[in-house]
Length: 223
Image (tube, rainbow, N blue to C red; front, side, top):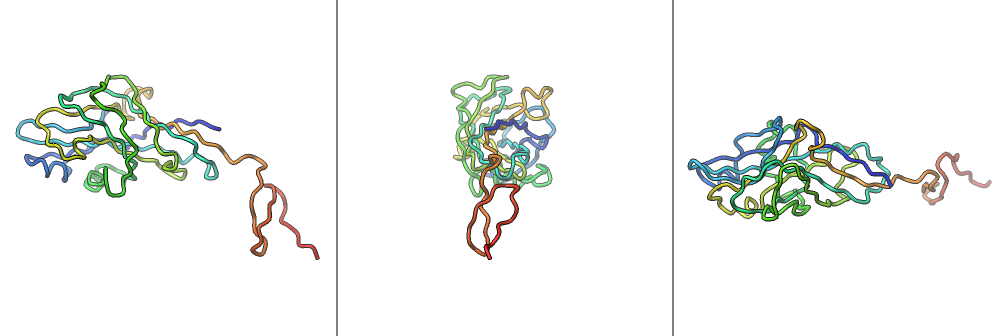
């Protein structure tokens, strides 16, 4: 087996929805951030405005051989700060959002969970703490790893997903791929098994399955 660790790309970031109406803040994006050193997940109410933040991660996993079997995968995110007075779960979805965040902001915001997004699980319940500099990890579905391109995820608040109206601060920040040190970058660790050298490969001869070893010549038909 082979273990590879992929760091989040610079395309990662968050998208914000803001409005004096909570339903509008959840449904309509107003800005995005892909160059900051931290990204935000959660909700907030202040100054007669509602704010909803959703995070986006992208990992270039295309170096995994197409014929390899992915055995397991783990997502790791480094916390930066906890600004929540109301606890929530940081939920991870596998979602093939479209780069760039700014050019595809509304579609990415709307699709962060539900629809074509697949729930991977809870990265962390903030009731258990969200300590700056600490990595929180989640085993993600090996079948969801993209061997021919980017594997992408979103981070969302469980209270945002449930439509629970915030009354104050309920958000956290995590370190992005643009953070000063790569030791804090979000990462995707993938364990895979390459196709064994010399393993028989199935071929077909006039519709009849035969087996030959890689490097052997074509099968002959007895005359």
